[in-house]
Each structure stands twice: as C-alpha cells, then as structure tokens.
Amino acid sequence: MNLIFLGAPGAGKGTQAEIVGKRYSLPTVSTGNIIRAALKAGTPLGLEAKSFIEAGRLVPDEVVIAIIKERLAEPDCENGFILDGFPRTIPQAEALDAMGVPIDCVLDLEVPDETIEKRLGGRRVCPDCGGSYHLDYKPPKKPETCDNCGGKLMQRKDDAPETVSERLRVYHAETQPLIDFYDRQGKLVVVRGQEKVEDTTALTLKALEERA
Ligand code: AMP
Image 1 (cartoon, protein in one colour):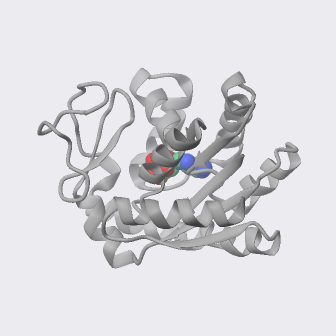
Image 2 (cartoon, rainbow, N blue to C red):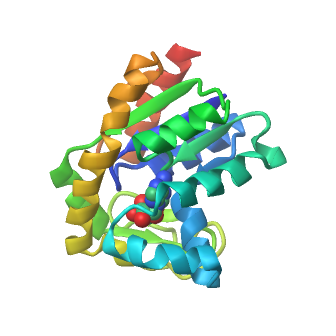
C-alpha cells in the first residue's frame, strides 16, 4: 500500500502517519524530518534548505524530488510506504508519477486555519527521533521528554506565529491544488481532523479500510 497524507502544516499528518504506519507496518517517509536531520547534521542539503525552512518557504522542488527518489529506493519501501509532507507542489506530484511510483490512496486531512494557528503553538518535537507531541492534545508521558527515545523536546523554529502564517499562505498557494490533482486521478479521500488524535485516527482507518 503506497499512501500520501496531504494537509496543512499542523493538520496532524505526521501523527496520523506514524499511527497508521505502525498499524500496517509501513515506513513513514517525512521530507520535513529528513531535511531537519540534514540541517542538524550540517550536511550540504541542510545548509541549502536552512533559509527556506526557517522562513516558512518550500525547499526547491528539485532538491526534495532528489531526496524522495533516493529514499523510496531503499528496501524498507519495497512493500509500501506513507508519504508525509511530499508532494507539496504540482511539479513534485508530477515527478512522483514520472518515477512510476503507483499511489493507491491520497488522504487529505482537513483542518481550518484558525485551528492550525492554535495547534502549532503547542507542538513540541524530538530533535533526535522526529517524534511529535502537543502540550494539550498529545502530551509526552514525562514533561519535555520524548516517549520513544528520551530526547529533550523542543519547539520548532518555524512554529513561531509569524512563520506559521507564511507556511499557511504557501500551503494554500502551492499545496492545496494537489487536492484537485489527486481527485481527478480518483485517489482522494477526505478526512476531517478532529480535536482528539484518536478520533482522527478512527476516521482515518475507516476511510482507508473503505478504500481497500
Ligand atoms: P514539515 O515538517 O513537513 O512541516 O516540513 C518542514 C519544512 O521542510 C517545510 O516548511 C519546508 O520548508 C520543508 N519541506 C518539507 N517537505 C517539503 C516538500 N515536499 N517540498 C518543499 N519543502 C519541503
């Protein structure tokens, strides 16, 4: 099963992708996590991406397309994967089609902008394993500590309010057109994001099971 999770930043794609991935034993491929790891490690990719990510802009298509090509060629993606945060533009989606990667289902997680703005302020991430938490909706068991690996949680720089509005602007301009793109391909399923993570998960699993 090859899945794409679409949705605005902070819609809950990463959280749902992680849960669904565990349930179906599918690896989650998050371009955001790959880029942040490169940034942390100070690799050439990280240096190239730094100014874009910190300004809430998209990293150039050719850079992320190359990342995805390499990642999807790894053996753990052979029997399926969940793409979280890719594609984010029409040229990226076209590049994925051109790679001959068949996509079974594209799940669009819908959450209103006002909710996104509130949510991102409370988001905390683990810089070591990429785990994602929320102070109110998905708190870690121990304050400021990652449940998975014990890393110290932090707030993403691009979750600052002024960067969030830019990211939402970019989402509507560049990523939202993908909803029509995949609807035309007959692959789109829409799930309304709920306040509670488990309620969204229930709707997500139901939607995927109905498609299977
Ligand atoms: P995310 O963790 O998915 O919100 O991604 C964080 C940031 O990484 C985005 O704001 C972009 O700067 C960059 N990024 C992640 N995925 C992509 C993509 N598919 N295309 C362009 N930039 C991306």
